[in-house]
Amino acid sequence: MVFIRSLIFLLLQIVITPLFTLIAILTFPFHPITRYRIISGWALTMLWLLRVVCDIRMEVRGADNIPNKPCLVLCKHQSAWETIALQKVFPPQVWVIKRELLWLPFFGWGLAMTSPVAIKRSEGREAIKQLLRQGKERLALGFCVVIFPEGTRIPFGQRGRYKIGGALLGASSGAPIVPVAHNAGKLWGRESFLKYPGVITMSIGAPIDPAGLKAEEINRRVEEWIETEVTQLP
Image 1 (cartoon, rainbow, N blue to C red):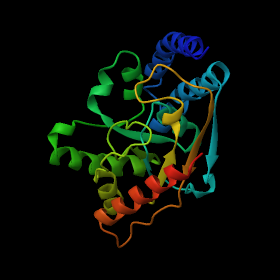
Image 2 (image 1 turned 180 degrees about the horizontal axis):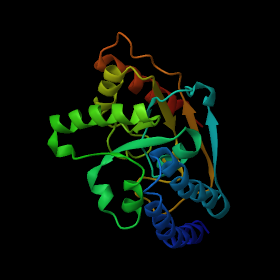
Image 3 (image 1 turned 120 degrees about the horizontal axis):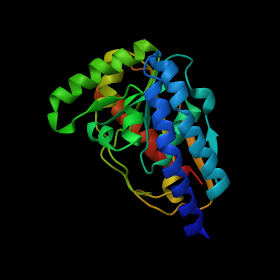
Image 4 (image 1 turned 135 degrees about the vertical axis):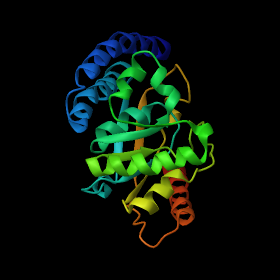
């Protein structure tokens, strides 16, 4: 049954995504936040399909910790699920992503219209400079900036190295930093086709004020909170 449900979800995703890509391209003349509000309808549709087809539901804890101004969202990365769910939980947002994702047919083309900060990791210091420059620009536009500090999806129960780019942006911009933990990898694993029914819990931590903190300390606090919180989720 899990296989059949997962297959139906995939087939529907394949049909729906090109349609949303066309809509995304047609939003080009609009303000970036208006474009985002339209394009994020894809994510809301996917969440609905996950619930109806795969019986994957979501519980959100700590939603009152979301600031009422643009912030940095530093999130645990286990699955494709959080890239979808964050769009329902947080205000308009952009992601810091690998530039290569923009080359993906349909998905990447639509993603390009959401004003992401698309970096080339191999550029090292230049990539950090781009992150700081464009991250501040996106915050000034009214977006939250979503960063996965581990850089790639990590299997459930494991821990990646937390890269310092998000903390540097926080220290440089002064924007509040919101850590996010979840257990999506239990039901929808890293690069997994199968999606198991159940409830995914997302926990949102209290914002960290970067004033007076060095990037290393910000990074340490984010990692400590997320990794501790993950172990306490059901």
